Image (cartoon, rainbow, N blue to C red):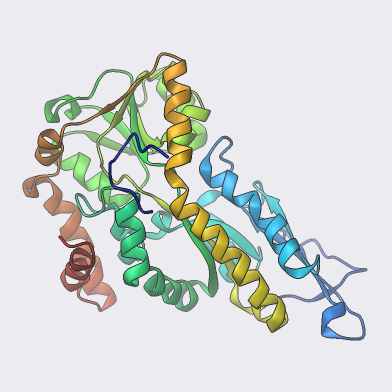
Length: 354
């Protein structure tokens, strides 16, 4: 498996309702059905899983495996139905916390402004590839965020993964620090927004659904997004310059389930589900670059070449004078939450050997 982007390789409060009477819940609906028989093993659980509407993405490819894996693990006793229209992307986590939706494929980065530890991987020059994301996660970060999801969002983490490597799709080439100046660039996390603002670009938070028209109308000059998703959406037709700047290169996703709903499922079924979801996580982390490579090959077939910024230019863009704002924002929010942000970042650096 050849890595074209980097030489490093890493390798339920379950509202139980009788199956005969499934209720529709006002504004945001979820289905959680429990069939009762004479024993725990006669129960059947139907769980709706809210996901983001992101066709042609690695995220969706992995989410599509969840129903099959649950059914296989439980012999059909726990069924999952995916739904990409129940709630908006930024509301998925709140819906799971409240039990309005039993499960979701959520994004850490959507909550990074509130809880900076969920966005540590987007800090400039900290994580540069999937190998480092995996190493950091397995050394301590996955365990940390599991606890945060449970304490703050009443959610149990079942699997971690990531979108394909992030790339900058732009109308004009952006090959130097100076090329960023004045460019309106769609971003999806506060750390990257702080960096771009510092170097003179104009970061623009924008829902993915608005990106195509925004590019065509000149509302934005480019966007950072997943290589696989950007290729699948054919953003290169309007923004034919595709660049790997190693800026917030890995953006994670997580499969979560409402804690109360999860605890209604018998322990033996939960154990079997966890084993399947561990396999899903392993595939997400260690088969990652095969999917990136496919997207790059498909773009090349359409005449689009991925340009990789030389390290000397990456160092200019992520120099301390520019990246300090992103780190300071992390430290300030950490202080508000009562933990030492600088020590947390140093812990991450030690884990990565930096």
